[in-house]
Image (tube, rainbow, N blue to C red; front, side):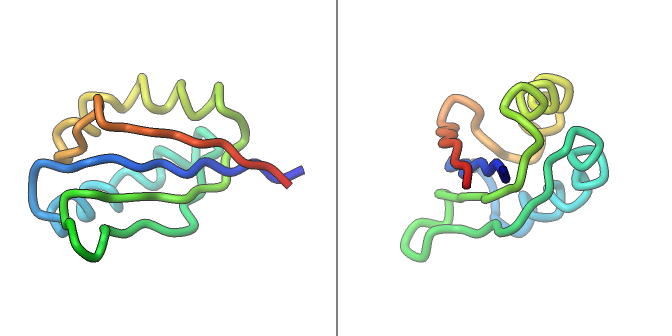
Length: 89
């Protein structure tokens, strides 16, 4: 059964600056079983972003978020705005 996470959040900088930091974290995220399918910004609000990823488990994703939290904040991601919804099929 595949597991997915839809993550919605706000950023406090330019989307392209956030995206550069996001790309630089991909190898690290994969070590925790997180593979990005899509990321983007909202059409009418460039500070509202979303990412869809295949994940090994919610626990492994949480481990990544804890380990990478300083880098996530430096990317411009406002942690307290993060909403995660888990899906599976």
